[in-house]
Length: 348
Picture 1 (cartoon, rainbow, N blue to C red):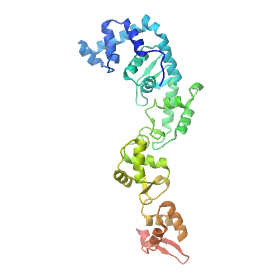
Picture 2: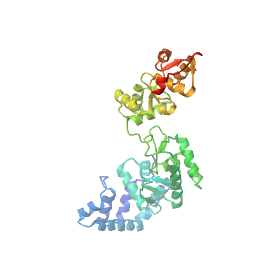
Picture 3: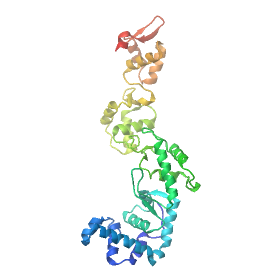
Picture 4: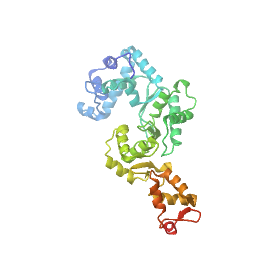
C-alpha cells in the first residue's frame, strides 16, 4: 500500500469550493464523494433535479472545466504531481482497479483519488474494450507500446498452455520494444499483464489465456487437474480433495472429488485410489489393458520386462501382473518364454 503525503478527501473538498451549490452537489453524487461511497448515474441525478441526463452531463463537464481553471486547482498541484509520480513509478500504465487499490482499499478514498485523476490534466483514461480493462496512463506512445506487446503475447499463446510466471515475464519482455529500462522489472511487468483481459494468472501463480480452464478453474475437475499437475506424480483422491481445499479454498467432499476423477478422461487410475494425469503418458484401463498396450508397442516380452514396464504404469503388486499373464484368454507364452497378446484378445 502506498502512503500518500496528502489527504485525498481534504484536497477534493478544497477543489469543490470553486463550484456553485448545484454543480458541487451533482459532482458529489456523480463521483460518490459524500458520506456514502455510492455513485449515482446521470439518469438518477436527472430525476432528482427534474432535468434530463444530458443536462446533468453538461453540468458535470462544465464543473470539471471550472475546477481545472480555478485557483484551488493550482493550489493543489503538489497532490497532482504526487499522483503523477506514483503512476509513473508503477509503470506509467495501470489497470484502474490496480491503481486505486495501490493507493487505498477504502471505496470512499478511492472515489476521491479517481476524481483527482479525472481533474489532473496529465492523466489519460481509456475505457475497457474486448482486449483491455479500464486503464490510466500518462504518455500515449508508452501506453501504445505496452498494449501492442500484450496483443503479441496473447497471439502467441496456446489455449491449453500453463506457463510459470518467470517464463511468462521473459516472453512478455521479448515483445516490449524500446520501452525505458526503468520499467523493466518484475512487478511492473505483472501490472502490465493485468491490464489485459486475455491473459491471467491461476491461484498457483501460473499464467495462460484467461478463458482457459487451466487458468480460471470452473469446478472440481479443473481444481483436481491443477492439484495433480502441481504435485507432479500420482496422488490419492483423498489427498486431492484435501489439496483443493487448501490451495483453492473450495469445499471438496472426498466422494464427490473421486467421482469427478473417474468421469474425466484427463485422469488415469493407476493404483488403489491413486490417480495420475493422462498427459504424463499413463494409459487408461485395468492391468490386462496396460499389458496388452505394452506388448502392442514393444512386441513379445519376457515376464521380467513386462513386470518392469507395467510397474511404471500402475502401482500394483507383481502377483497381480502374473495372474493376468496366466490368463490364456488374453495372453500366450511362446517357446522362448516371451509373452504376446492372445488372438482373441487382439480381436477384441
